[in-house]
Length: 542
Image (tube, rainbow, N blue to C red; front, side, top):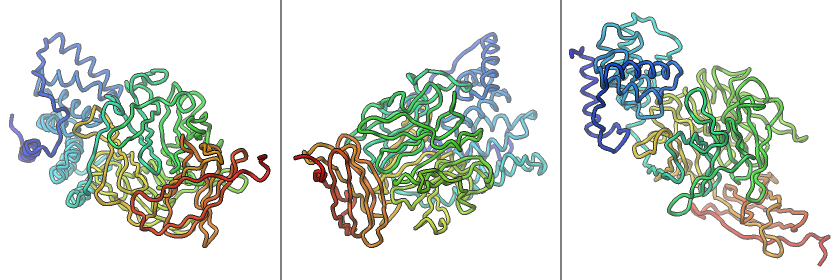
């Protein structure tokens, strides 16, 4: 086959990259022998593949198109559509490159073939080759570019990516394995101040209802797991209080791990945010966060502050700067939610923003964006606001390889600022998106505070699971957190800067306490961990 110089260079670059293993393989198993099919079988496969492709079931269409390409290696349509299937599935997207190269060499190739080739080259971190392909798309189409393709944005991704990969973060990724992940999509990890407890979303078999949507995916449920020093427990479905037979997606968890926000869609839920509270070991029935959000607009990706008085969420609603934006709602003194407020052009762009995550200091906001200085699709960014009346700082890209040239939508970071979870496709995964645990050599946020962890016990030494706790800064009287002691040990978690504080706890049945807390800032990553025993209420009988 005869290729022009650009296609030849791209093929050479791909061979070189694959040979030194910087572009990962989809599987470590030996490649299967070529599938030999008859003309009749090819005809049936062609219809099957076309139907799946038309229905946007791209991952399901990969197998029939692989067989069709094996049957007719130079067929433009088969190669182009197989490339599109790889590109639009949660698999190794760099596999699309060779198929777009073959398709582009044909006279009847689609007008966007070089654009799609550029996207697949970007996925392989072949930035210079991707830029050439995008420029070739302009040339072939004589400068007529579909604005919806955001071509200049993709070229900017390439230049951003070239810079980020020069200074990678020192980080180790660990796949929790089959006890947590499945061969289906596992995503949307959310965690509390410590990374011992994790909730996430999965499209796996065994979900409630077992319904398959129009894309061939099982409708998602929320799952939970716990991390020990050496492994993770088997993921469990928390049941009907969080999940239903329709769409249930984990979106946010507060530092104390007792308030969860859930995205629900289907039946009476029209793409809205619901909230559930943990009572002891059990999650209560998730309820609509606020009636004002029960609209035709999808409110996705949400988080809640530690005091439960601020909600950040993503939505394509009135007042956006373009696409989805991040909004905030605050609770007033009557415990009613105020109107959504757009966070403004410092945070939001003309492209989409998603999945806000308010960190444990209550001042640092993580979110995903297609704009700013992304290196490809959505990247995770962080911004800081010292107090509610200040402006948000210019967002900073958290860096490669936490961010990649793919869509990086899911991110959580423990109070130690070094460990957390992402959902992505990597070598060694089980298939589709997997949950990955990461451990940074250096903290992502420095001098953010000390983790204070307290177990609240009754006068008899039993866990006081209904105790309402608050932490007050003595110098200002500011209430930094209002939490309910929860879990088997009736614990609370809060990140505190150096200073003097007072811990207050009240329980109608168990008693009360007031304790001084001194944080020096030198306690190290493990922070402060204490057990407190409440005093009986004055009205309690001896």
